[in-house]
Image (cartoon, rainbow, N blue to C red; front, side, top):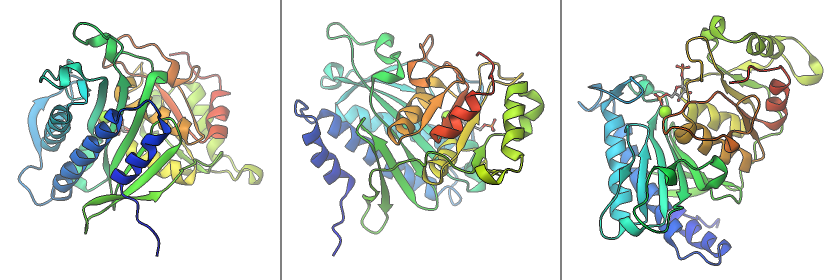
Length: 334
Ligand code: AHM
Ligand code: MG
């Protein structure tokens, strides 16, 4: 009989990879897994519940929040607070960092950046949404931790991952030693290892970009799209165009099947749309760990300087060969 490995067991077993670790990171990942199950329960019920719909408030990005955004935000923050391993949470839904100053958490070693419910505009049409998380080690040993602890380059991440609330719910994460995926078995309420050592194909046949914005794209991006659409049997072109509009779902598919996901600068979004801290860095870390590549067109996402918490960046991410090809199109320097 095949042995089922739960997320909890896997985390404990992998702790041996970090000989000096005291288990804090493992507990932090476990806390995220627990909050994910609670959020999953609510997302699954979304069609049934009065909770569905706009909360009426507007987040820092000027976008209207849905009630489930707020719910997910609260659940993750509460889980991190009670877990005691995280001293600061930066959330896409909150303008400022949140200091967790309980007696245990204020001395904790880790910082968590989170997009609690990415793609939430898709909830009311039953399209997959996701949570994206990123974990950093606190830099300041003395005094209270602050913004500088959060604004570390993506290369400093110690772990990152996402949860996809889709036709099944999965948690996929990396601690810098490969990528592993776990599927939630609702009958036992556990995430079970289903996708060990995930590798993104070096090349693929899918390109994912919101082509509705075509007129707003720089010429270089238009040229790359044209390249994807031209017939060429050697490179399996034309590629298939697949765009869900939910970054986690689009990247999850491309991670498994091979492909490129692009959110470029546009004339309406001159810095791109996606946020470096909450979306680009964690996904870049994970995709690189799976053998892929992530750039802003010129520079590795993980090496970009962070000037402000909610900073945006263009992104070209996915199969290594496809991202390299896109970069050869003389993309606009952001
Ligand atoms: P959100 O964080 O407000 O949910 O926005 C992020 C989402 C991503 O999941 C997705 O890739 C992108 O926005 C889609 O944007 P667009 O509708 O402009 O294509
Ligand atoms: Mg988001």
